Length: 324
Image 1 (tube, rainbow, N blue to C red):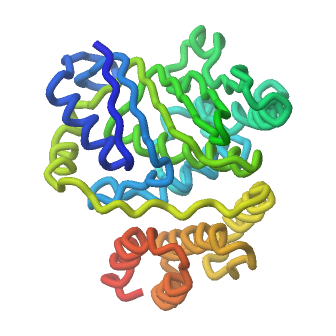
Image 2 (image 1 turned 60 degrees about the vertical axis):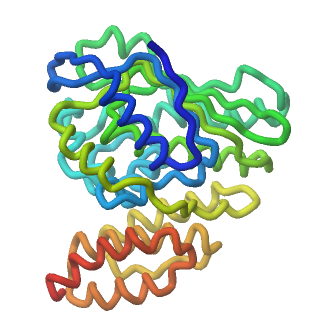
């Protein structure tokens, strides 16, 4: 039933995962649509910085960054994530203001507890601890009549031989949409905590109870597989030192760039400044004000991490075609 799949990049991992689903998946029915499923697979990403798909169909850097910073905002506001992935979470919000299943408050302010800081403090005091666990889903979720409950159960951080490893347990994972986004967000959190502890980034492990592919995504998954394997272009390492001031600056910039897409990029480490540049390009290409194309091209020219090139080109080319 269970299987272990290992790869060095998210594309290699997703490629192997889909092939396994097509070969071994069992058909199932559910309220959200028919799907095929394998139970209990574990996925191992040996190079967590190779966290962005470089395929034509799954290269979703802007929505992935949006979801990550939604978590890092420490809240679960609907309008935050709706900016990046319109309509996806509308049906998961009972009050149309917040998303109960969002991870931001669960990570940083769950019943008054900052679980991320707890992990950092614990591993600072006891590096070999086996208790550095963040709980996402809880008994209230299972007892709830709402359909929208977290897919993630726990995140366990293990510091071994100077490397921070992360083991994520999922109750359920949509292969085509959720899997790549989850890997991006969780490996970024893994690296944020590793930098805070001044240790190296280790291996990422991702175990799923129900790993599935909806029938409506079969065609898209087939197209992805036909693209073949992608070039390996990992993200650059995060800069050394405490990253949280940089995160705070990016969150402040992101709030402003929604209103003013021509907002000035903050003077900060190039790694974090590049994230701001991506957010600015997203805002410019979403709002499309006069002069957006020239601004995008100028910002793109300042990007220091060439791993983002293909994502920027794809986004800006649509703007260029509209002559804005």
